[in-house]
Length: 427
Image 1 (cartoon, rainbow, N blue to C red):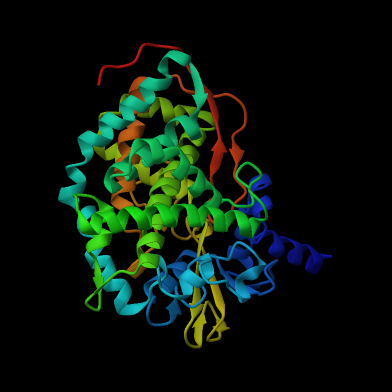
Image 2: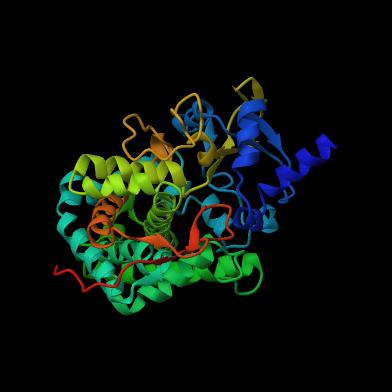
């Protein structure tokens, strides 16, 4: 009975529907306690190692390039069973070609990362602060007279789309269409976003975003502006401009990551604060102008929500991890959402502590592949939290949030909230 239960639980870790209807933490907590580097059966036709303890997850990230590869089989579990025979142009084939920053190994990754990092350096981020605050207040102002909204779509989802579109200089009339493509790519198994099979949905979302970004990046290569797509258009590897495939796949990645991570972290953190930890929310109202407290609260939102549930690597050599012998070619899945609850690292990990002083969470990964936009996401959340606490201190949940069916992004797709209707605040 125990073996059958264990296998069923293992299979759930590759079932997007399970992530929508249940909390994988029960499985991951047991693995973290009993078998932190666990050989895991899957619905994908290939088993893998589930890595659930913080120290082991961090070790995998720290040894990118040397012991582990993002490129051999991609940086995340595949969305379907067609991973073994990838079709040219689908996500797995693009990963294996090293067409995207997240799936590049070694020097090509380091070179492209350096070429694109300028826009995410501290001076350039500080220059965006007023823009972010203005966007955040305008977004909240749009719902204030209504007294109710879908927080996930109307607030948490709008800010990152507006900001990444500002950074990429994407016209306003295209935002909703591109957001739909991003949802299809991130949660292709969810009925709300599904268009055909899971694989077909992911391919349609991927194609829509990559084709769009390719076209704009090529235009910007000829007529560059001060935006991220122009940076992509000008970037070179080994003296050559990025190919059209590389332009599109990286543009897609920046748009999707800029949207999903921030939206899901904001939703998860705010849902906890106004649902289960209302006293913490009330304390934060009085500290909304304290930038350090708001920054700590933003990081706690990321730790708590762990919006990117996992990453995947492929072992490039035989290596021992947590007492287990991993063979070259094995898939190694690092569960961020488990590492961020590790009792050996975080004091009271199942408590949302908006003033958590020591919070070395792995919500943005670690090492060579640490999220390039991590500090931008932190700034967005810090500012939006302060705007919410100022504008809608009486924010309340109006029903249970709905979770998206996705293995990659553990996120809320619908979250109805209510508050006292009020006039917009002057920007």
